[in-house]
Image (cartoon, rainbow over the protein chains, first blue to last red):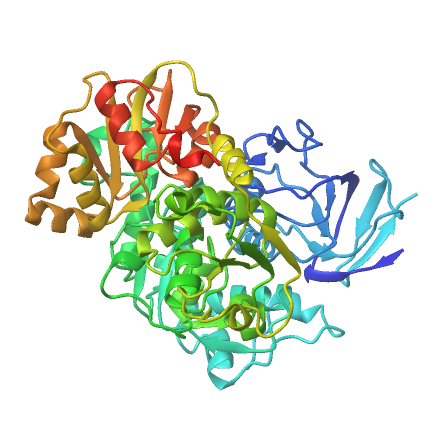
Length: 134
Length: 435
C-alpha cells in the first residue's frame, strides 16, 4: 500500500498503465478513442481508457484540461491518474468533467515507482491510498 | 455556511489555502451560482499548486474560446446558464473562426457552428471580442507589477517578461474562473521567488550582424525553450534596442519548444537591470555559452524539409503588429508575389484597422497578401493547399504546423519570406549564419 495525496479525491479500480515519460493530453491523447497518439511517446498506441494511468507528471499545453474533460464525456478517460508531481492542468480538467458529466477521474499524487507493475490491478481510495488488488 | 471543495472534504492532512471572507462568500454562492462553481474549481487548483491563499487579479485573457471539443462548449454553456459575468477586464484569445472572412474556413460546418457557439458564450459572459493571441499589442494592456490571469503561452511569457506583470500559466477553464471571481491561488509566477532566473545564456560568442537581426530571436527562443523546459532563462548580450516584436518572437518560441513562462534579457526587460538582478543575487543553476553552431542547429531544427516546392508563406504567429506590417511593406517595396504562392498574414482586428487607416494594408494586399483575423492558420483549416512547403518567420508556427495541419515547413527571416514569396521558391540568406 502507498499513501498518496488526493489532488482530486475519489475511488477507482483498474489495471495499471505505467508511462515511461510525461504525457500532454492535448496532442497526446485522441479523446474519441482513448489512445496515445503522440508518436514520440514511448507508450504510443496504447489505450488509457479505464486504466489507472501512472506517469511522472502531465506536460505541455493547458488545453489538456479540455482533452481530459472531453475524454471523460466520451467514456474514454482513465479510471484514475497517479502522478509523482502534481499537475494542476489535469486537476482542473477532472473537476470540470465531474461537475459537467458526474464522472470522477480521481487524481492522486504518489510515487509508486517500484511498487506497482504495468498491468497489475490497482485500487485508488478517496483518502489517497493506492492498493494492489490480488 | 462554508462549502468546501470536494477535494477539501477528503483532505484533513493537507493544509489547504487560507480563505478570506470574500472567498468564502464566493464559494457559498453569495455572488451567484456561476461564481460559486468557478471558485470551487479555483480551490481545487489551489490545492494542486500548494497555494497558501488567494490574491486579486486585475485582468484576464481567455484561451478557452478556441474549440477543442464539446466539453469546452458544455462548460461555457453551463456558466452562461448559471448567469456568469466576468468581473475584471477580460480579453479573448484567437478562436477557430475568422469572423471577418468566414469563407476562408475549410473545415466541417458542424464544427464551425460549435466553434461559433463557444465564441458567443464567452462574449455573453462579458469578455471583449478581441480574438487575438497578442493582447499585449493593445495600448490598454497590463502594467508592471500588476497581478493578472492570462492564458495563451506566448501572451503569458510576454506579460511576465516584457511588461513585468505577474501571471501564472492559466489555461482552459481556470482562465474564465479567474475572470468571474477576480481571484487566483497565490502560486507560481505570481510569487517573487519563482521569478528568479535559472539558466544563464551568454551571447558573447554570437556575431554582431546576427544580434542585430530579427531572425535571431525566434531561433534563440527555440533553443532556450528546449534547454529550459519550465525554468526561467536569462539572456546576457542582446542589444539594448531589441524591440517588442523581437522579444515577442523570442518568448513565443521558448513557450513552444519548452514551457517557458518568463525570461529575462539583461539591460532590456524590467526585472533584469543587471544579471545579478535577474538572478536575485544567487548563482545560476546553469550557464550556457551560445555558439553560432548552436544557433545554426536550432535554426535547422525549425525546418521540417528544404527541398520540394514552395506553396505558401505564413506570417503573424503571434499576430502581426503595426510595426511588423510596416517592415513587411517596406521589404515588399512595390513588387508582387509569385502567383502560385499564397501569402498569409495573421493579425488582430485592432491592428487591421490601424494598418488600413495608414494605407500600409493596401500596399501589402496589392502585392498579394491575404489577411486572416480572429484566428490563426495553424489551428484551423484555412490553407488552400498543403501539398508542399510553407515558409514562415515564426518559430511557433514552424513548431506546431507540421503536427497540427500536416505541412512541411521552411523557416527563414522575414526578408527571406518576402524574397521567397516574390521568387516563388525558397530563398535564404546564409551570410548571417556563418561564423
